[in-house]
Image 1 (cartoon, protein in one colour):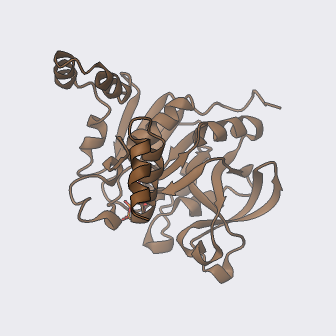
Image 2 (cartoon, rainbow, N blue to C red; image 1 turned 60 degrees about the horizontal axis):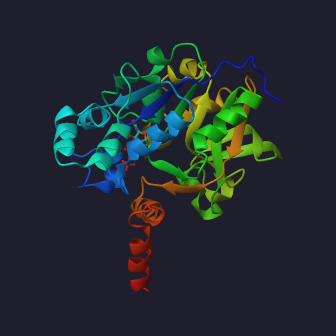
Length: 293
Ligand code: UTP
């Protein structure tokens, strides 16, 4: 049953100020979030997911060398004129689909990459006093119904805070934020603890958070303490842990294939999966893959 009293999720934060060191030297000048998965950059995949979920305001937390990310969503008159002169109408449609309407894209700066928690804090003024989504462009979920749409549907039932979760192999818990859970019903778990990157022996479960969050604005009070955590970075997970017990906090076992595109292997896996389902080149990609067997 939907509780109409929950404030709607209208805004999404896209933290894109990281250094992308795992992709060096490719990311020396080029933002990691501009690396393409099939025919569009990572950032466009997640902006499209947010649009489909009904998000109205798109907030980029950018840093040095990241201007290309905002430019990508701009109107490009010369390009469209050239494509029109050449009769490439299908390409014009593709280019237009990458634009964001006037007054919907907001940017704030994170001067130094001090961690994901700090990046989110940089968006505090643009969020104000309402629940909001955070989407990490590194994490793609391939499913007809986008991951954020699934989450907003669940949020409309439960309110509070919600993260997207999936099981990881136990020997890999030290790479992820791991949950300590109570109830586990119909794909929704209620969370009683959060540990950032625990050793496999200490991990309270194997359920990890991926880069989709719906959080209440009280998170900013905790982020403003600027406490450093794992990796000497200001971690979002540490601030979220402080909301536990004070506000409802759930995890959604989302549907779809998840790709960690922040790692080179996950990036290649996503490129294969997304190009295989591309109507133009999918069959040829399959033939190509078979030829490597
Ligand atoms: P990651 O830790 O995966 O990105 O952060 P990174 O630090 O850029 O990559 P590596 O580990 O060096 O290869 C996930 C997301 O959070 C953003 C990143 O841009 C990425 O989209 N981020 C991270 C920030 O905006 N600021 C930060 O201080 C850290």
